[in-house]
Image (tube, rainbow, N blue to C red):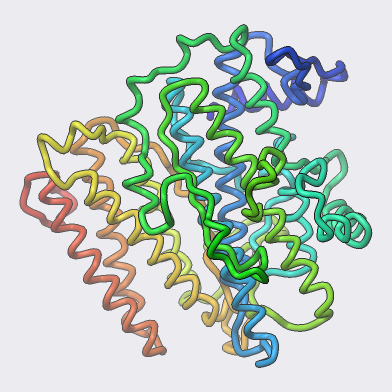
Length: 489
């Protein structure tokens, strides 16, 4: 997203005191919340692209925060009696993070459908935007962090009429609001995720604002498909079956349902938007499904942890780890060289994941006719990097952040790469992946010199071999013999 446009938008929001307008959709007045702040120099189509760009960043921010929190759970500090509950909470939050990945990719498909650029970036300090729910923190799971996640995913009203929601209103809602308020700086405000989706849905639904010609059905082949990404997560867009579910299955025990729809029309985009919004907060889910939303699952974890009381459930991990010294008082610089190297390796895998995802949007299905295996090979590496991040997150939980071997320990910093755009030209894109894999091999070699743990050495050796295999595949895509010489093109 253009920084200039983003700043223009923020200035308009801060300066505006006007009442929020509404548009008529199917005869009903629908409030447009933040759409009152559309800059005068933007069309509604432009503004919709901007909102989707911000929505993509929001989904990305939530995803990495949930991942950090989930991988902080467990470890030797957890009492044996609490370990089953902690494992269940971890799997529930990981399922939510997987679904957030689906949301992020679904928004990319929407941008492609509307002729906008994809956006896999995210803000390091997202509280600068009025749409973000709460200040961004990579932190171990706690009641306070759960309160922020719950606030972000909370529906405006109870969609199901459940006892759990009544208990939330009676016992939890005020505490959750207080926890979020404590994180806000002067002039900041917290928001629910549904605010931006309700605004986007209202704009897309209004044919006077977004004409039919804005939806490019020919973009279908350039969108990421369910068959490519979400295999293993269940049938496409299917709600997990309730008939075979145990009658006492809790919200936190439901499997992930990853939404990655391709779209060709306004109606298909609206269906996808409502499905995404419903999965998060459930304002759109009908009474014929028992699928728990993100709000339902976080609420269950929150209430169970609240009842459990002051107990240790996580590794002793730092907040907001970073590999670069910063004046940001909320960041934790990793003073241990070993910790910085491992964290940098996590950053490399994160960069490769984002780069290969971006590349998928440059590879139409027709490319397979000229070079078979291009799209499947790229998708294979996307899944490989997901598993690599999982493995490194597990190892980082035992790597001291500083030179004290007793801890505290670190976690994946998820530092945004210096660039997310891929180069122009297909060969240059493959070469950029090759450079990153070569950097990983060099870092693995550096770490292997002094890595003290058997688990770490085994993983580094295996990862190095995977990088070598990826380099060989990349040379097939390039059609040239490989060399690590920096002068070779």
